[in-house]
Image (tube, rainbow, N blue to C red):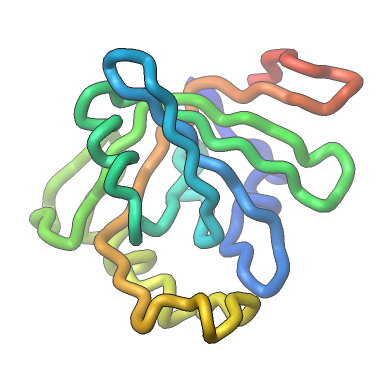
Amino acid sequence: MAKLTQEMKDVLKVVGKGGAVVHLTTCSKDGKPNIVAERFITHYKDEYILIAEMFAQKTKVNLNENEVGCISIAHPVKGHTWVFRGPCTVISHAALADYKWYDIKAGEVLAEWGEWATKEPPSEVPPDIAPPKLAQRGVIALKVEEVYSYNPDEAGKKIL
């Protein structure tokens, strides 16, 4: 099991207001990848990454077939270029409060991160392309098992 460093935790936070975009990659059982760009992200405890689940239909289908996902981040600050890999799940608002996935309790996570759009509205989205109402359906959780760097000096190097 990999643990996030403090530097990684500092970068993996709610990133609205012009911060970095992360990409979540999942893959179907027959090998078809799906990549979605995400804005609402944070760390949880020492080994989890959370993303708001708003419009991730293909992601949910893929995770039902293959639980492994990757999150890549290319933060504007040099050196913050990582890929985090591990099992993923979707914790929906319909989950029972005491539902547990690894060390995550659904009720705790959803109480804190279940309504990201109200805490951190994406101000950089022009009104003409913004959805009429952001509808968060839950949280996507990734349990970090491996971390790779894709910094040119360390490309592909497993660092955790």
